[in-house]
Every structure is written in structure tokens, then in C-alpha cells.
Length: 293
Ligand code: PMP
Image (tube, rainbow, N blue to C red; front, side, top):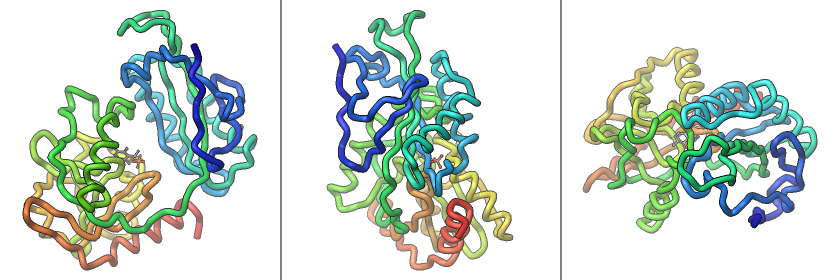
């Protein structure tokens, strides 16, 4: 039995690239026994296309392939094929600006946890990008923590990592926040649900060491850009009680881009970031890198 993929609205681009072919988005189907649907074993990327080109496509494709290899999902398409498929998808849909989503998942031949005959599938779809919010707003430190790295490999972008992300965001919103900041298993500041975090004091830009959470591509771009702009950068372990020593904070992510954090509630303390000078400079630099303006 096949399950029709329900498409939300007109924001979706018409054609999906799936296993080497184009299918109309509202005709694409997956099987109800899809292994990755049951066992959260898909791997994916979140990418942005600007003026008909995916920003950092090579880096995203490398991470996608690495994530699949980490979970031992065999690949039918290699690096060059996946790059070409992106280009074809953008051309076929006449895409200028979009959020682009490649996904690799195990097929539906068996529900056994491990079965060597399981097929591997890949699709790339795209959705019209909505305007980015420059402000990340209000955060609080969630009771949920990032998984222990030996329970889920942090650099593998798999659906399994995201199973409780909707719950974390919904809890945050119910409490009047925009998102939650998560600590790692040691109690160090890690990241938000789908973005990395930075702190600023004077000309010093600090971000946590990415050994328990995703070392985001945007995080790496921003670290390099900050260095290039003559700012001092550091990656270090940050405890929740250190947050109040900083004057600015911002979030980074492919979809989030660079967003200012207004405040973080840590226990019964509200840390308000009044300044935004470096944050604005990073936003400008990122806009230049992605949009050339
Ligand atoms: N952390 C998590 C958990 C994410 O989902 C994302 C978004 N992919 C990021 C960080 C930022 O990563 P990137 O800059 O590569 O988009």
C-alpha cells in the first residue's frame, strides 16, 4: 500500500527529483512500510538556494553522504550525481530562491531492523523560502538535553535526532519563548533545536565546542567570516552561568541564517542582550556571502 505524500500548499515547487527521475510533488508516494519512517533512519539536509544556486552545496552534499554512511545506508547516487540532481531540480522548477531538502531513506522491503535487501532511496524537493526573521527572540534553557554522543552520533544529520524537536519547540512556544536552548549531557551550553549559538563580548566571538551537537555549516562560515573581519574567535565550553558575561548572542543555521537573540532565561535569571553591533555586522556579512548584497 502506498502512502500519498501530502503537500501543504502552493509554497511547494512542482517537481521532486526522486531516485533519478522527476515526479510531480502531489503525485509522489512512499510505501507505508518505509523502514526509515518506522525507525527514524532517514538522513537529510536543509539547504538554501539564492538566485538559482544552492549556498555551500558541496558541503551539504558531503555531510549528507557522510550521514548516510554513518547509518550504513547504501547509496545509489554519488557526490557528483547529487550535485547534478540539485542543479537539474532548480532548472526544472525555475527556482531562484528556495529552501531545498534532500533526503535519503531506507525502503519498504522489510520491517526487520536489519535486512541486507533494503533499498536506499533519495529525493530532493524544494519549497518557496519565506522571508527570514533577523531576530531569534526569547530563549530559555530547556529541561531536555542533547543526546549523549555515544547514543546518537552528533555530526550525523538523521531524522532520529529530530524526533523530539517539535515537542521542544512547542513547549517553548507554550511558555512564551521562540525556541529553547539545550545543554549537553555535561551541562554545557550546546545549541537550539535547529541552530547553533554564538555569544559576543567586545570584539570576542565565542561559540560552544561542537562535540555534542551539529557543527553547522553556517556556524563554520560565520567563524571564518568573523576571523576575516578581524574579530577574535573562540570555541570553548560554556556553562549556563557564563552566559551573563556576554553582551550579544545570535543563532546561525542554513534556514535561520543569522538571528539576534534578545534574551535567555536561565533558571530564575533573565539575561538580556542589549547590544547588537557584531550581530548586525555578521548578518550583513552573511547576506553578502549568500545574496551578494
Ligand atoms: N543544529 C541543528 C540541530 C540543526 O538542525 C541545524 C540546521 N541544519 C543547525 C544546527 C545548523 O546547521 P547548518 O548551519 O548546517 O544549517
